[in-house]
Image: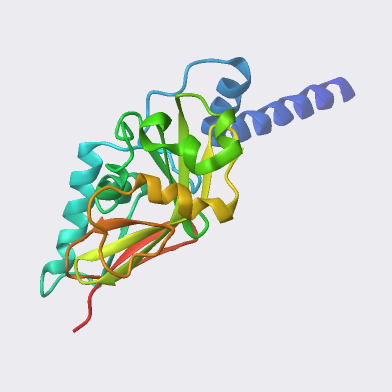
Length: 225
């Protein structure tokens, strides 16, 4: 009799385990794939990108960013739009990025806190990085990955700047005091009036009033009358 109760108790316990496993099957599958080394699930619709992820720049992302920003120009359009790092860098930051030799190749972008980051492998000799960095330049090769992190500021309608607050070349962080000197080697052509000494110039639609980066989000605001 007691053996029957024991068997019944085991059956109920197994049923409970089975129900819990069924309702948590997706989480269990993820854990299994992570530790078993299996291929990722084919369903990518539920992938959530978190702040700090690196996203590749592309013409398609630029078109998507342009479409979002263009909605601000409509009289009945939204007061602001949110862009992903790749949309912002592929569109409103495109002009600044083009000043980096070869930077459009395998360039990626990310947002961390209140800064937008862009990194790409560029020709350091072409931009004169070694000369700008002084003794640090001796540690550099001909090409390396350059990472720029900074904020976006609207100077006046149609003109903005990407204020570079931190730079890393390869594994070496560049001292903040040297950043303006390095940025000056990256600038090409005539610079707009009022441009900060640590900034790259940006062209943007005249109806953009402000660009804010906070909590991993890039928000572009319509210019108020």
